[in-house]
Image 1 (spheres, rainbow, N blue to C red):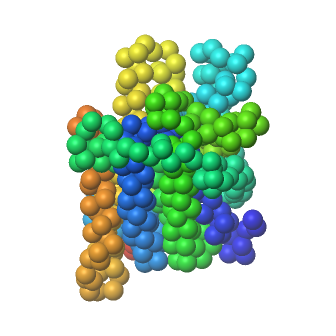
Image 2: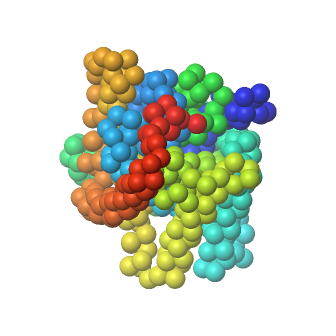
Amino acid sequence: MTTSPNGKSLGLAACTAIVVGNMVGSGFYLSPAAVAPYGNLAIIVWIVMGAGAICLGLTFARLARLVPAVGGPYAYTRLAYGDFAGFLIAWGYWISIWTSLPVIAIAFAGVMVDLFPALGNRFAATVLTLGVIWAIVLVNLRGVHAAGVFAQVTTYAKLLPFGAVAIIGLLFIDTSHFSEFNPSGQSLLQSVATLAPLTMFAYLGLESATVPAGDVENAERTIPRSTVLGISIAAALYVLGTIVVMGLLPREQLVRSVAPFSQAAGIMWGRPGELAISIAVLLSSIGALNGWTLLMGQVPMAAARDGLFPPLFARLSARGVPAWGMIISASFATLLVLVQAIGSEGFAAAYRLMVGLSTMAAVIPYAFCSLAGTLVAGAAHGRMPRVSAIEIIAFVFAIFTLYGSGAEPVLYGLVLLMLGIPVYVWQKRNATGATDKETAAGGAVSRPLPSQDKFA
């Protein structure tokens, strides 16, 4: 990948790699075991959630065509609903990103311990977890171009073994494993509601190509194409991969499995197959860390440029990246890892809650953005178009996933969102104070137009 003459460094291949890399992470690797108790219903929910994710992707694609704004969901929410809604989405979306880093990094450390049993102690696992987080931060600090190249290498390298299991594995499945539709004992509605967040966690990241819009070549075309293409690749991999793993492993064994894809590969190809999948999981985790690290600097940077986050987040390094945003976000992720490492079972439970909060906090921006296109188009063209069926489906999809997240994550997620209000008030107070000083000094005060202050 080369940098184009206009300075844009992310093309179709890089943006698609970022979308697929962020979606196909450690959650995909463990998902067959998580959904196994629900039998064939899980496969249907994967397909339905994939269709909903594509509808969401199409709404983001439409928004990207209208306004390829830096910050993705935050930028679109602010354009459609105003500063306060935009701030809440930026705040929650930012939290969802850095709380997801420890989950991915711990999955990486777990595979390393499996490959090298000598590392099987708490101190070594913690060092591995923190080491991979900060190593990826260092890669991203080298610039968006380096992050894009890294995304392509890790994403396309891991797709080969995962794709082999998902496609070739269809020849090895035992159809008798699909005899039960919903063996969970729950009602159909309860089962679907429970499966929704489990599968949605794997689809998080579908909007990734919209966030670094300022660095995307021909953003109006590249972002929509890479978004739909990335979601389609991930959805096909999820559905086929789940069918294969469920068809190779008995349900009782699959429910207890901590490495379902490795075990499935072992049945087909023996120990070499298990090793290949383990390496793919390492690449998957690293790729997902890379993509989310890129986003966790871009989102607060966009909000800071609009005066909604502290100015520190808008500062760019000599390489043109929001270094302070990445470092601060990675520091919060480090604290989560340390709490999990030194804590008791109670801390571990709190940590799992934060994982749920990450999913919940990411779904809220989806709900806002699903209907934002009508308002953004109305502001841009002077007339309000009708809400399309795809946008309605995307909104219902987001709300149902939020419902399925459960009362506790939604409650604590609301508390975390409300904790951002003092930051918003502080920023608004500072902005008002600066305007008053300029007015008192006789200076001309002008507010940048949306096309000037929101887009890179």
